[in-house]
Image 1 (cartoon, helix red, strand yellow):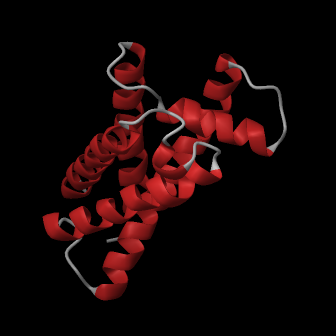
Image 2 (cartoon, rainbow, N blue to C red):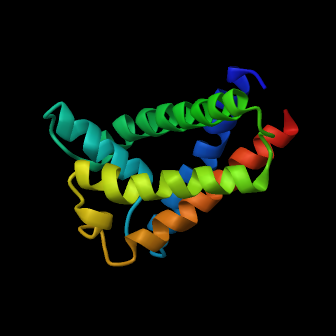
Length: 145
């Protein structure tokens, strides 16, 4: 599988993940939106004024970039190990690793504390659901390529 497949699949999965996240946030099912989390982090890093519009403007590109990177990393690892890119087991293991990284590294670094507790007690579950959505999107996109 070529690296462009990973980038494309990651982008498509990231769009799906971000859309589900934002809709669930807007209708009150989730306490946070990935786009806003990414935007908040971006603005915090560059020490810019934080506002909803700015968080979307900065969050969307960051989320799409990281999704493309994670898609390409997956394809790189799969190619390196000569495994089947559409293996449900491999995608599941990769998504679990991404989910744990989000909870233990990304959210605390972004200022949302361990497991994203600053966003709410159910953040770990919201993130699990969103990472399952990402994994499903990645699987379907790679199957179609």
